[in-house]
Amino acid sequence: MSATIARSRGLAAEPGVLVLAALTVCALFVFVVYPAVRVLATPGWDEALGVLARPRTWQAARHSLVITVLSTTSSTLIGFAFAFVATRRDMPFRDLFRVVGLMPLFAPPFMVAFAYILMFGRQGLLTNHLLGLDVNIFGWQGLWLSQTIAFFPLSTAIIQGVLEGVHPNAEQAALTLGATESAALRTILLPLAWPGVIGAMLVVAITVLADFGNAVVIAGNYPLLATEAWFMMDGLGDLQGAAVIVSILLVPTIGLFIASRALLNKREFTASGGRGAAVDQIATPPFIKWSAVAICSATSLLVLTLYAAILIAGLTRQWGSDWSFTFRHWADTASHMDAVGTSLLIGALAGLVTAGVGQIAAFVHSRPIPLRGLVGLLAVLPGALPGVFIGVGFLLAFNAPPLELADSIWLIVLALGFWHLPQAYQSTSAALGQIHRSIEDSARDLGASELRLIVDVYAPLLSRNLLAAFLQCFIRSVSNISVIVFLISPGQVLVAYVILQMISGSDWSGAAALTTVLLAITFCCVGLLQAALHWIGPATRGSQA
Image (cartoon, rainbow, N blue to C red; front, side, top):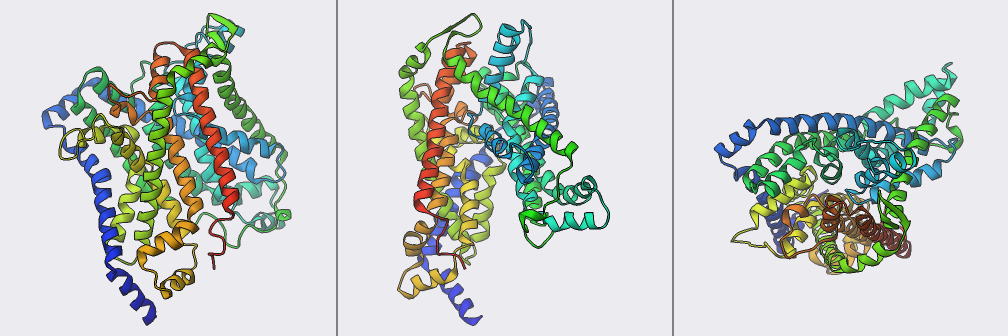
């Protein structure tokens, strides 16, 4: 024990670590705390009261609450069905549902709403062209459908992790005591899964509240807080009013974020004892089995319709009026390669910021130094901030001296890089906890300093996490819309913003073709990630106890 304490004191006293920790805290204060403070401090009382007095502000707040409840409920129910099917070994098509259930995660943030306008709108392929119906999908109904399909994979991932930890012997014990299979699932599985379901609802609710891409495309005249902030700035030129709106939006997202972390960090969702053998799992009652399969089948059909709509529209001469086949729109995407190239560059730089700062922050937090708690808090704080809040914050903070970044891509790069920081920090922290202390001690015995440990020990062992964090941020940054709409300058062209303008101008076939380019980039990145992870090998090989 005394040796451990002495070693800890040595770590805390090493100047390099303290300097690195101080620089990390400064960076987090400058690019996380400072923009948030500027948003909250910019509006004066008169401006704030004026915005709060507008009936449209309260209408947007009320609509945001309603759509959050609706979309969160439906996304969680469907997510539970997919998670249930994925974890029951007697379910048919479970591998297919696993793949299809992940597909919305790889779609650009506006793609779901755009695709359903193409299929189910007044000029929709299914509703108008095939069925002859005049359907208005714009408004809360279309937004509800879009957000449900876009965000149910989030709840699936959380609930599936909980269900996989339920010990099959608990279900077998219920049968031994005379319960039916249905009663065993109701009395054993559901109570153990309930905290995970609540956690999933909190995470989805945060995402729905902050959703800008689907809302700006399909909400129509249904004002929401996220879209109202953009309207205040873009339509009225009222940056202070936009700051008031995003400040209102921050209140529920912060509350939901704190609640979700408090619940999900308990890790007391399941019975103890591990997963157990696969043969121990009880049979799923037929009614429950086929009900879950029916829900997953209907949802999978909607997901596949999403991708089909984008691909078909990109090959159609004029969506809604001329359905003839053409490659013209795909050829026209060549004129937007500058926008694609700029977006790729911004995504790559933002990914480097996220991966680099995430690893450094996780390393600093793992050292027994006074600043470690503050580093951990600031590193996860962006997870509670909506994209529109980040956009307004960086616009206010870095549009004038002392650090003026306006009209440069670095304004967008830093905004996106620090916004995606929590995922990189948390995954790296988890991986650091799996690295055996003897490896670090051996390197130190050979004379390695704390900073040298990052380069020679942790960077190689954490290469999988770094690569995953980089590509996750890269993919999201290339197609981001909620942040860049506030930060893009007149001379800049980014592919997601170009697509949004094309959708607004009813150039749906052209927008679909350019969206296909984004999808191709996304799936290529996912393929490269899988190949790279396979080449690197198992996570932290040889590093665990």
